[in-house]
Length: 253
Image (cartoon, rainbow, N blue to C red; front, side, top):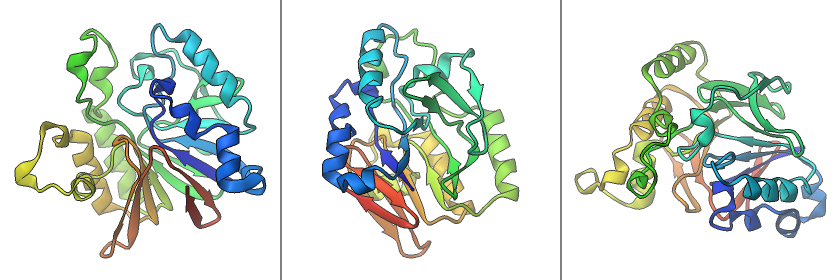
């Protein structure tokens, strides 16, 4: 059995559905591998429940329902769910509860700052990032304030990391700040505003405290991979490509 990972979905606003349809995935991985997918993880900015996009959501749900596996979403920054308090929490047997938003297909959000065990892999789930396009959007949207972690969330996370430091994989939206800078080939002195991201800085602190095999993230609308020889771990950024984790093998196509 395997887990599929993909990058930002944005409720298909930029035609991202074409990267994860049944036909696309079978063409990429062949039917035998497709049939073994048990979960699909979207690495933030899934964009479900966007106000006024109810018809779009239903179109997306119908397309995703053609595939026989549930969708689990990492919290991004463009996530209306961050401003909602009435989303039901359900236990699907992967550790912490998830925030369910749809039944058929099953679509839910993973809680940031939580540990999940999926297909015998131990995941630390993070999330959030800086939105650099706020000025182009309505100023009264309530979830912007929660794209960054609040002080209680951060304190609880570091308490968790005092007891739990070893993970198989990390799931986040943006990557650690230093890796973001490496893949963009920028130096600190030349940073543009989009690199001043408190969540990326938080991820960098987490990166120093834990051990893992690989870090998965999205946010940057690119497909990049970086391997840190010192820490002996990889950092996989996804957007148009997807990654399939089967046992300990990762196939990116």
